[in-house]
Image (tube, rainbow, N blue to C red):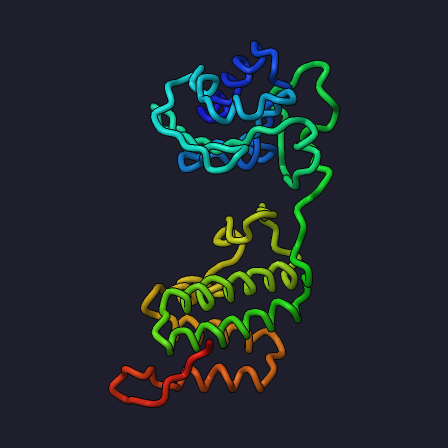
Length: 266
């Protein structure tokens, strides 16, 4: 058994001795897809407790330390903590009542342990993860293009970090959405909450040149050019916004040796 799964089973055995616990659910690579656990996985889980017990299980880690000492932890939400065991296992967990759990979107959960009288279907979310409000190729294409446009204006103003977010993060997210919608034959374990997970397993570099799309803080223009060319090669890009982006790619920043007017947006 993988050490992560053994740790989860040990936690379940301890929680079963406490009268205010209801269930333990494994999530992520500790959930239904636990065969993908490896040396770089962390341990994600939900603890389901009786009404009034949430704060007790979030504020204290005595129960968490039952299988192994906890070396480090902090509360990152009113219902959740992150912690590092002394043996190197990193965990992220949240604590909910049954009623709270029914209102949460989650996917891929696995019942590790539950009381015999626990409600049925605890591992099945009644609110599956919601997709973007306009999940169409047209929407994602034009979002990507306008992300490039805004990002290049930020770059010209000297806001390189903000530019990198728009060009190398937001626009690339839209590229991933376009691939998801237009490559139905590609099968990999998509994460409904994080589309960047495992994309390298799904798309080879010739289909998704990530190294060129995300080259780093100092290369926003190069990244924007690659993303624009990638979009134009695959989708009907509006020539007006394409020309506007190319004009920004050709513009000189105000402090460059070439001079030129400042191109900025409020």
